Structure formats: C-alpha cells, structure tokens
Amino acid sequence: MNVSSTGRFATRMEGVPRSFIREILKVAISPEVISFAGGLPNKELFPLEELQASAAKLMSGSDRNILQYANTEGYLPLREKIAERYARKGLKIDSKNILITNGSQQGLDLLGKIFINEGDAVLMEEPGYLGAIQAFSIFHPRFVTVPLTDEGIDAQILKQKINAENPCLAYLIPNFQNPSGISYTEERRREVAEICQGKPMFLVEDDPYGDIRFRGERKNSFYHYLPEQTILLGTFSKTVVPAFRMGWIVAPDDVMERLIIAKQAADLHTDYFTQRLVHQYLSDYNIDQHILQICRAYGKQAEAMISAIERYFPKEVMFTGPEGGMFLWLTLPEGQSAMKLFDLAIKENVAFVPGNPFYVGKTDVNTCRLNFSCSNESEIEVGICRLAKVLTRLG
Ligand code: PMP
Image (tube, rainbow, N blue to C red; front, side, top):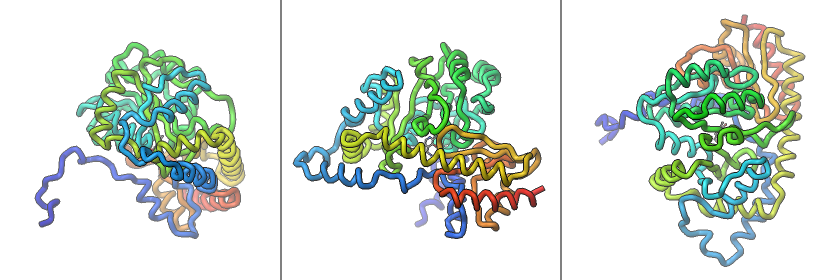
C-alpha cells in the first residue's frame, strides 16, 4: 500500500517551502557552468591534513568514551573553548549557557520548537536567510518582515512592527548577512538593542560569518548591548568544515533548559566523536591563523568580483560591497526580473540565485545573490563577463 495515498501526512508540513537553492544547484552542476549560486565555503581551504592528524591522535588513544553516548549539552571542554573565543571578543559567556547543536541550522529548529506557537509573529530581515524561513515555517508563524538598508535593518520600521505585532523572536544576521552581504553599523546595532530592550521577545543573532571579516573593523554583537534578551547562534561550518555539522546556541538559563529538552527529544546529543575531534583540532592548532587564510582568500575573491562588476555591468545595476562573508547582492533596475535573468544566464553557462526565495510571499523580484567563495579569480572574471552580456539583453 502507498501510505501517502491514505492522506495521513501532518498538516504542519503544508506550505513549508522546498529549498529553492538546492533545486537551482541541480541546474548549475554541469562543468561548463560558472556557478555563483552555491553557498559553500571553499573546500581548498579545509584544514584536511590537520584534521587527519587530530583524528588519528584521538583514535589511537585508549579512551573508549570517545565512541560512547554523551550528555545533551555537549562536550564541556569544547563549550569552554567556545566561551574563551567569545571572551576574546569581550563577551562574558558561561560554558553552561552553551549548547552544542547539529549545525546552527538545528539551532533554528530548536528555537522554533520552544518559542513559536502557530500564528505567533516572528520578525525577519527582508531579504532574509532562506534556511531560517524554512526552519520556522514548520511551526506556522506569521512572518513579519523589515527591510534591510545599507546600514542594517530599518530601525524606524523595526520599532513600528515590534510595537504593532508583538513578535516572540527577531531573527537577525548583523555580520555579512546571507543573502545580502550587508553588515549593521555599530550605531544600528545599539539602536536595535534599544528598541528590543524590555519587550517580551528575544533577539536571535545568527553569526556564521562574523569571523570571516576581510575589511573594516569588528563590530559589537547585540549581546554586548542586551545580554539578557539575546540568543546567539554560532557554527564551525565556515571556519573549520561544514560536513561536521558542528554548531552551538548561547542562551540564558531558562531558555537553555527548554532547548535541552527539545534537543534530547530530537537526537539525544550532537555526534560526540566529532565534538571531540573539533576540540582536539582546536587544541592542536591555531584556528585564528587558519581563519586569517580564509579571510585573505575570500577578500581577494570578493575584490575580483566587485572589480569585474564595476568594469562590465551596466551602471544602473546596484551591488553591495561586503566586508566579509561569502555573498554580494545585486539590485537590477526597477521592473526587471531576476528569474528571467537566471533563465538567460544559465544558457550562457553562468548561475546565481535569484532573490525570490529570500522574501516571504513575493514572487517576482529584481535582486540576486552572488557567491564569491567558490570560484577563483579568473572564473569570477569570466562569469561576471557572461552575466554582463545577459544583463544588457534583459531590458
Ligand atoms: N545561518 C546562516 C545565516 C547561514 O548562512 C547558514 C549556512 N548557510 C546557516 C545558518 C547554517 O549553518 P550550519 O552549517 O551551521 O547549519
């Protein structure tokens, strides 16, 4: 019997979007295509030999506990290392307030589980991170969106919407946002914290890219301004490797308690061997040195993309100039369609992500996400040139 034909699926999956990017990546996979579509870190920079050595060291010992079930919160020495890294950025975080998760993507799911009742307002940036839209959608919230400006989320509109809609969470990416590459100014961070202060809500700061800064000065986390109402999401996906699915949540005690219950129900604990491996790697090597290499490489790639855009694109196409991360964002002249551009671009063997999936409830948009971390400088030059050719035909 085909069980699906009995109609026994739960309604909670209704309307949850399939990952549009994964669909696009299928088209962009052919070797002739220069793809700015993916969101992957550059695999050439993975610390393969170092991880091999740390894994060998771990496995050659006699500690059988590395292969055993473990506690839900995560390996304490790893949580302590994460807390130390925050301390160096001036944030005082106790390791007991850190929960190791299966990537920060699981953090989004767990937060949805413990905070969102059906119909609750969840405040998001527009454009916003597709993975968060997908993760929260399962809990059927009411998405309330606030546009991003070059300086971060629009503070005026944020204030109005918080007052009018009473969201349980505001989900923000202040550093090198996915998809736009935009970073919040220091002033905007302070303002956002001030607006949220005292409201019955949490600010969720998702920061997978914060360490990958290749230009400009480091800015303060919302936690610096509003520790009691800020939940932080972090990950080793962009600084070590994404395959390990090693992320974390920083949350106040009462939130932690519920997160731990939700995490137990989901998977008991994050892969313990991999937690030990990441800890071993962090003990054996200088991760900051490694991060510096990533920043240098991505900085050059971003510069190559911006320089090619300046030389080849029509002047009416606007673009962001990220100070870090992996993406930049194009805005086509009013009325032009990113989807139409995508269809034409694929025929010229160049791919990107049309802005559509980063908006809630908008079908045709004139914005595009371009990834620069996975192409070398000459591919970037050729790819942007191809895209420029298509742009002049778009009209
Ligand atoms: N948040 C944002 C903003 C991201 O860009 C990503 C990765 N694409 C994630 C979360 C998920 O990262 P992880 O690999 O830690 O699950």
